Each structure stands twice: as structure tokens, then as C-alpha cells.
Amino acid sequence: MRKWVLAAGLTVLLMPAAALPQAKNTDKGSVYEQLNLFSEAFERIRQDSVEPVTDTKLVETAIAGMLSGLDPRSVYMNETEYKALKGPANEEAASPGLVVTLDNGQLKVVSPRDGSPAANAGVKPGDFIFTIDKEPTYDLTLPEIEQKLRGPEGSEVTLMVRRGTGTPFEIKLKRAAGKAPTVSTRVEGGDVGYVRLAGFDQATAAALGDAVKQVRQQAGNKLTGFIIDLRNNPGGAFDAAVAVADDFIDKGDIAIVKSHKGDTAKHIAATPGDLASGLPIVALVNGGTAREAELVAGALQDNHRAVLLGTKTFGESAIETIIPLNGNGAIKLTTARFTTPSGRAIQGKGLDPDLTVSPLKLEKVAQADRRREADLRGALKNPADTGPDAAKSGAPAPTSGAAPGDAPTVPPAPGKEPSATTQPAKGEQPSVASGDIGTTSDEQLSEAIDVLRGLALVNGRTTAAAR
Image (tube, rainbow, N blue to C red; front, side):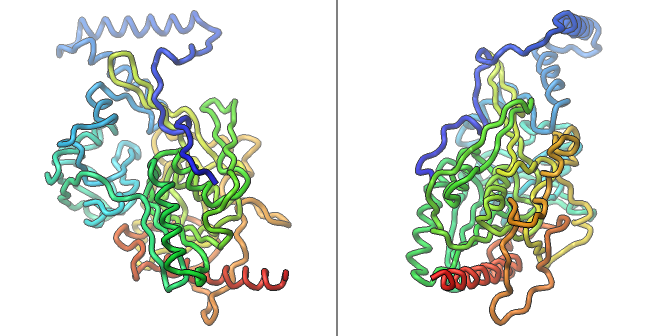
């Protein structure tokens, strides 16, 4: 179990452009021909454009065009946008608390942040935003969108939102500064430790350790296990997510990181130690479980350390590198992706839970409309779809023995019949609303508590039989 934060090297990185190695290209003549083509187009636009355009604008647009042809996450940031990313001024730091992405040119909510104005107003993962303060979002880049969402603390931003195939509606959100803690905890029923992970930053691992200690103090020797809630967790710092996964995994791999060319692979190994001391774990996931949260879920599942319960995850495993350009902005480029320890590809597929439990409040139209990473225009393809590793993608393949991703046998809770909503993992289901997470109306949490107590009962019998 790591007691330190991993060196930032696999998360969103900052790399000077001068430090980048020169790309290998055996056909230099072809490169020069293409550059000549660019130069010719550049000059013709300068001379003949009906509207005057600056050289800076032309170059920035060209760079943005190059990146837009790669994948939805690779973008160009001008100097203003880059400065805002590194650290916006205090009066401009407030936001409604939305994590968003682009889906075929449409702005889609990945997840509202816990405790944010957006979460409190009922914004849900999968909602589409058509306008921001009356301005259409379809032709905006992600940096431009994020800049428009930010503003002075207490100011309002008006969004036009569509949920499923319903009629678009307008919602006004106040911008709030700061952010809620990424870790919160409580004891359920006197014997279950509930830990909510809303994101990952450099303080998450330490806060998680404190939360587990708090649960142990409150529950004492009645503690039967832990529920790790990763629903509507949009990810965050890569190294922080690795540290969290390592906190519950005593040995084995946490993830495998592959470069964008697929010619190198780095295995990230766990270190000895388990915060839960071997007690059973149920991890809650849904369509808002994205990116680094999927790394944690996949590591727990492949190492047989937790039962995943909920619905299919978002399906994004890209690792982005921020590369400053000399004197003018930066580019955010997808340079690698991660897989689960067993090599299962997450990109565009997501993780199937061991037990599928859908929220009680379902809307079939929302289910039909739900889109994932694989649906995004220019989305990174999953190499497992066509390569020799095709069998590794999706859910773990069943074998005669335990295989990575297999769920432990889960008996029904004493005195309760198995729920009709609990079944082997299949397709996706709608996500629970952010406001319902961890509440008494949270059906997924109720099921997780029952499953956890069943696991604890089996573990107790196994331990007694071994004595």
C-alpha cells in the first residue's frame, strides 16, 4: 500500500515543446511536400480572404484543426485558455461544477461534481447542453466551453439542457468557488463502512486513510466490510487514483499503461498493505464512473478485491499530456491509454459490473439515448476489437477456475430473497441522479449493503471452517 503520492508522470503532464523527440519519418520528401502545401494555402488565405485575418489566427486554427482530427480529447489551447487551465484568477475560478465532454459536436455532461450547484439542481450524467448563456455550444471547443462556464463567484450561468429525448429545458446555475472534498464517509447500519469517492486529487489518498480510520472507530468490531462509491466520479489525477487502488490491493498489478503507438507497456504494481484488512468490498459504479475512476474499479475487479455493483461505466481510458508551445498556448494530446491488470481494454467499452442493479427511477428514453465514449466522433479505437487481444476486452471470459474479473459467489442476505433487480452484468442502464447517491432512496446502495453482508457471512464461515 503506497504511503506516498506517485510522481506525476502518467497523469496530465506538462512537457516543454523543446524537450519532445523528433518524430521518425523515413519519407522526408513527403513531409516537405505537405509543408509546402500548407505554406501555399497559408499565403493564399492571407492574400485572398474576403475578411482580414491575422497570421496568429491562421496558425492557431491550423493547429486546432490538426488536433480535432485525432480524438475528442486532443485540443489546442491559446494563451488565455492555457493560463486559465494552469490557475485562473480568483474572481474567475468559480463554476457550476460540471465535468463535460463533446459527443459528435454536442456538449454532454460526464458528471456533476458532488455538492456543486449543478448536482444540487439535479443535472445528471448524459444530459446534453445546447446553449450557455444563449450561445450555442455546437461549434465551441472544450477549452472555450470551460472558459464560458467559469465566472465570478455567485454569478449565474444559464444552460439549455436536454435529457434523453425529452423537450429541452432551461436551468440557471450559480457559480461557486472551491470544491467539495473528494472523500466522505459514514457507517451504515452500525456495521458497514460507506466511503464516497467523488474524484481524485493529491489529497484523496490521505483523506481516504483518515476516512477508513474514522469508520473503524465508529463501527468497532462490528465492521463487516466497505462500500466504495465510485458512481458519477469523473476521474481526476491519475497518480491519485493509482494510490487509492493500491490502498486496497496487497499485491498484483493496478493497471497497464500503453503508449499511443502501443509499442511499450508499463505495469503499475501494487505495494503490500490493505486499508480494509481483507474485509469484503463492494464498489458501486454507473455510467458516470469515468476515466481514473474506471482504473480503480478495474483494478479492484481484476484482483478479486471487490464486487462491482451498478451499471456499465463510461468507457474512457485515455491519458492526456499537456505540451506547452513556445510562447503561445499549449496542446492537450492523448499520448497513452490504460487497461485493467488482466489487459481488458476500457476505451470505448467501459466495465461491466459483476452485478447489474439499476436505479428505481428509470426512464427508457434515457437508456436508449445514452451515449458512451465509443460513440464520440473521432473516438480512439479499441485495439482489442481487431487484434489478437480481442478476447480480453469487455467482461472477463469465464473459465473453469477463477479468472480476472470473476465475482465471488454472493449469497442473498440472511432472511431476504435475491432481488429481481440483481442479475449478471449485461448492457448499460441509466445512472442514478447525483442527488440520490448515498440517500435512503438509493436502491443500488441498499443492494450493495445486502451483498456486502452476504459476503461477510460467507467469509466468516470459510474462516471458521479453516480453523
